[in-house]
Image (cartoon, rainbow, N blue to C red; front, side, top):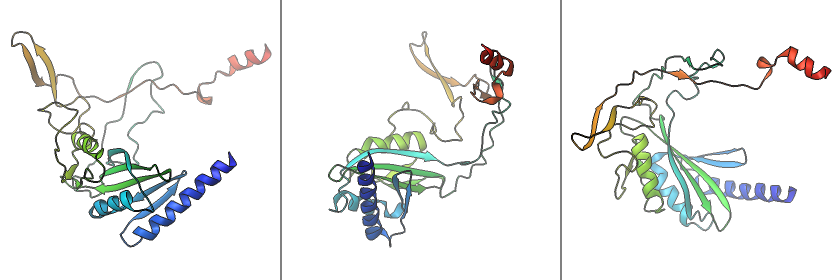
Length: 237
């Protein structure tokens, strides 16, 4: 186990050194945390950096394992207050107040997870995008697997991928409005869908559910809920 750990650390050090050597002057930051490397890069450098990571002999990241979007709106601000939540059912939670800014240049991020089979290296890329229409270059020409991943990020977060061969929704319905993984998208949605037996087709109607925020039942196993008397009886037994 010690040998494996040392080998892993040596591989990470080798990869980190190669990244700093190749991309130090391109505005890229390297984060070494929790035994993983994360490379944060400007959106305008994404395509060039990805191509180098894919083809250069020092990297050979030949597989794109995953690609996803992230909405950082209100990141780091607690949205729920669960200390006073009901433990016998459901209780009302605090109202959402995200104070979203549509033109925040770092509201969204596209995250890529890469694998080098040749060197057994893994690397995470993070590219921040923002504005009313967040956009970044498509990597479908570098890794073919990016095609459907980028369509998913577009569908759920509204992130546009410049140069994508067929950027259209992949999970939601054809006439869906909005992007459901954005934090300002209502939890109850925009419309209701049901089958109308008279019209013999699916129809869309306004949402009839009253918007509300609920805190689900919270069960904690800590000292706040320890029954002292019961513990003493178990100790005496």
